[in-house]
Length: 313
Ligand SMILES: O=C(O)CCC(=O)C(=O)O
View 1: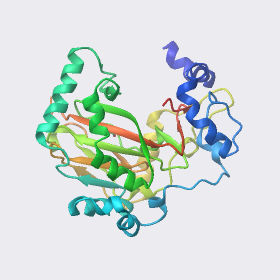
View 2: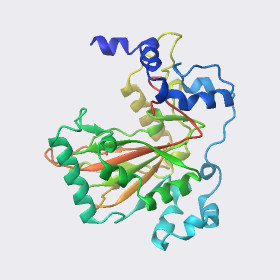
View 3: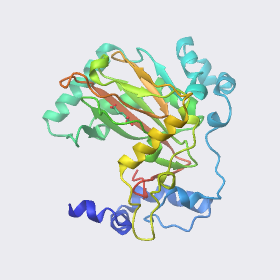
């Protein structure tokens, strides 16, 4: 209770930021580049960038179908992967089916079980955060060279692994864009990779997404009246954000929801602003094991819009 009360005040984050200098220095050169008068521990939100020009990733400005074939790395990929990547600019996501072999996924599942048993990782509500920090094997999945090639081709720049999230079951999270949680300036400098650790049926609460929704304007605090004051964060709830997304979808009837019935070993890569979420479970006991990785571009300011906190890297 006390913690959630304190977390409404920006200074509570600033105090904690102050003691995390090393993990926050990544933004300081970029604050200078964009002429922002900020310390490494300062709060930051999307309104700080009003009137500042920043280049969004090139594939957001131009069609990747024209740009990708000019890359040597692209031409060394197999045709099936190439065809999938070519849809990125249009759809805002890419499916790489059977990207990992079933035996490789078995090893990942075994590793997660063993780390849990050894209490090296733990549940945080319905998820496990940062298991990559406790396991070479899990880290090697995220940094697998062919996967790295794919995401760096889509972003046309180097991408740094930020975090992993493991799920045992569907998060049943409503439709959202990652950019409300992990935000960048310029926008679009984060990418997500989701790995199916089992076959997924409609009963299990599969992932859903809206192809093409990455082209909508980014929904930030001011778009659902969640602006902060000098000392206090905005007073809207996360549900207010979800309602805003619901409204955006109602206004954009051309966007159609698709549900991803993944097979064990499939990979889904999505854009920083793709609207996506997880269906409700039909079978309450169903598992839906998955692992998500988020990567940030190092040439962008990284922060969290809702808490206005710079990202600890
Ligand atoms: O796997 C899930 O249930 C949700 C994943 C998701 O929406 C996310 O990581 O942003």
